[in-house]
Image (cartoon, one colour):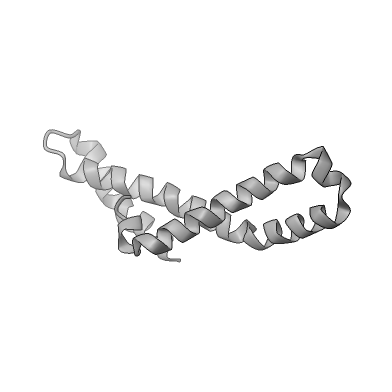
Length: 102
């Protein structure tokens, strides 16, 4: 984990990631012709997947922001790092952290 995700309890991150994985798995199941032929099953899976869509998107975005924040933080603390890049990272880090909590 990185700068942003470290602020959450590991069990919370694990649960969010499991929901994101469930969302992806439901998508794979819905592509299966056998599932598509079973309208009740397809509907049940589609409803569950729709309920997870916003969570999955938010978790993915948090992971992206976490990667960015970790990279920016590393650039600002690495001795010998390019000064211009380090300065840009220092300016971007607060924005990324703010976006993560919105």
